Image (tube, rainbow, N blue to C red; front, side):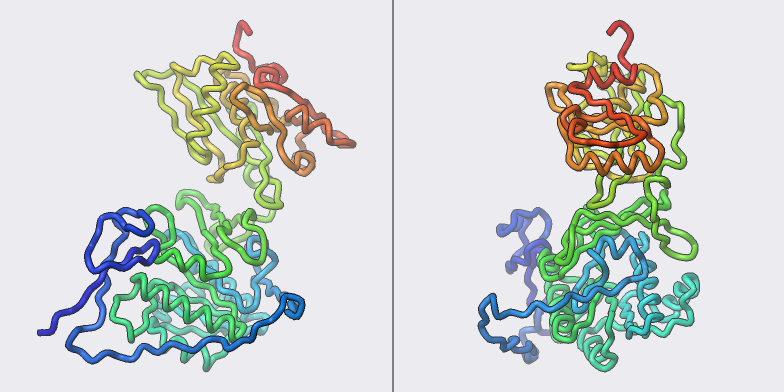
Length: 461
């Protein structure tokens, strides 16, 4: 019986080695070498068909015609916001997320909208049968849609059907299930994912068809397959969320047509994904007013100001080492701010457990949330609630100073729109804002001053 020849390929960088290695010598990743079976030694080698180059000529920069970039509305305003205005013709988009988070549901809604507007749409599934797709479409109210469905995972057949159907928009669900029959490796391997994505990229650029690839993610939350996959595509979107929450977050990790700082918020319902058009009001609708440890902060997600509720609970600890539990913020940053509060504001946190939470399942990464977190901790420590019409924002340094933050005026305008009349902010930033009728800005220089303004200083200070 002829022996099969195998090689080991790094799933992170694509490095190949005839033997397995615990650590990839190219990128340094651990346990990333995966076995890939290649052609049998005794079998005749199949010719590997590869298309020729584009055959273009050298051009000077001033002779290149840009033309106008055409955007197609997806029918979901939140998705259009993250994409930078809509779906660009001839673009290659990669959407990743945990299993069951709603990727296929979201894209099926997009296909239904585009088909209703007269676009030729093809939905290719390598994981589900046509009957399963029809059942999901019935739940979304798209059972009478004119979009075409193909259940196939062999790339040569997919390419043939693509050229025959000539769609304007195509979804590949998922790229990890696609394979090229002339290659000996299994579907989902590094080489199969790379070559399948390369074929789809060439088709998208030459035919002007916008293609969306659905990608699986690893247990660490990164997209499965070679890292070169993210370099090949034009847009990389991550669909995030907790199955215990009804909200889903859509973020762009890469976008050649717009900003990567935009955030789209969706609500999972029985009829599909519903865009949340006013997230500030939605996130604050169930806020517990009059309770200590709650502080409203206005953050920026791209071009959108968004109000969120930062919650803190400081309780007496019965452990040798006090517990620190953080959800929605960087735990290292929280530890640093707790140390600043103990040193500069004289809060005795060494014998208290601290629990931090950002309501709604959001994740805050900007330093402007430092002061709001500190005030929430101080409010819980002293058991004195922060007034309901106050919002807090500012960066905190190691010396306890409150530093300026960007785009304070936009944050203040969002706070005023939702009825917040008092803003606690850095003194340097407050001096640059003029003419905010009905809003009082309280500028502070230190954390201790901020606690004094809110009247949440510990007894004896």
